[in-house]
Length: 172
Image 1: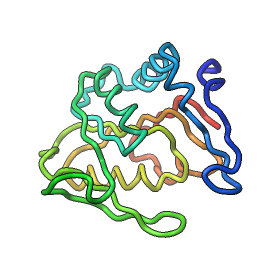
Image 2: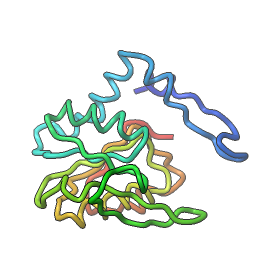
Image 3: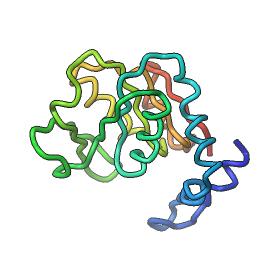
């Protein structure tokens, strides 16, 4: 994992002052590293029945579609408002400064599916918890979440809780 960590750049004061941004672009550009990252994110879920991987735009789509392929599952995108044709269902959730919304097509889950959530980064956990709420509201079972990296100091894991396993490949 140290080889993967070396490919993630720390960018100070981006996108705003005081933020230390983790730039995954070099990892994405390296064929071997990207394959290792996907395999590492998929490993805990191999041997489990997963029907669908749901992921949040935009970078979550990169990992979500690759995980779906690696696990032999379908893929369902969770999007910002107005990006999907109707009918859609959604959930509003709180951000540190304001509100946001996630939506999905109303006809993509029929209920009872075993769903793995995927994203690139776990920070405060607000988006991932909103994704879980949205998927569960469709009658699906969230079996867990797989992430490239977790920013441990921001408390996302505590917010996620113990309802389903959460796997982060890298920790900062």
